[in-house]
Length: 404
Image (tube, rainbow, N blue to C red; front, side):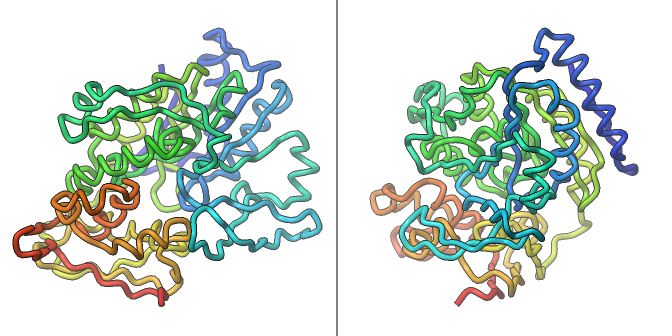
């Protein structure tokens, strides 16, 4: 059962969201024997690279549940993105703190603010939401991860239609085991790796360990973004749905549908059904069909994408509309880093089409799958002749950024 509302023309009001939360609480939680009163509740939310009214949901979720539950906490589903930073208490106006992020060798400066994400200052959060904690996911910290299952190589082969056949350890942030209810709260958009984002993607890669992150991203690269983005039933979606079956903590999904900054839909329920309905609406709102492919596109990612790792969506979202031999120019003077987290490895391998890696696997098999995936997604589809060493991408990708 899904409690939801959506429209291609009208936007949801605050009152609409309040009503949907109240109905979901009554029908899907209390009515289903999952009354959160006196329980510990964890909410998974996106970081600042996703467009969603997180400040509104932060406030309304607290109003709906904060006075009844034993604990209400939030976990930022970063995947491998850099952590967001808590602002110092004495920064009364919410000045962002800058510090170094040392996820990998070759780290650089990253600036981000948890208080900006949830729409508060540090002081306001301490006064109005005194017991709420906000955690960053730590994908690279083994002590924060718990193995909850394994997808066998035979299952992987079936789910991926033979693209990959490896045993996949399913590791998640161990915090999920310390709560009685998990709310997945995030938007659904066309996505280059999984088809449509949202739903169980907030578990994998959102709060997952490196094994399944690398597996699913490389799987998406093998399938190619061109044949994945905007499609509901994909190999990666099947894998993360299978992995979500290992989660024993009850899950409730709040799947939002956005067009620009506007909230057009909210579907609450089982993570498969709620996500599916949201994806259907997103397909109508967020995919534009053109009469003929373009030869050249100037694509400008928003400033919330502060490295090429996230800003490369300027390529992914436009690639299907580019003619063979065409060009995408990623215009982003504000981007000065390839990746705050993975820059060193990307510098080592460069950007290439999928078959450049596949046909030289002995050379690249040590590189994490998510790194290879980023490389080939940015380069786009194409061919590689191992005999001649000639690589032929379908289109050209030109960077007009602040990257030195």
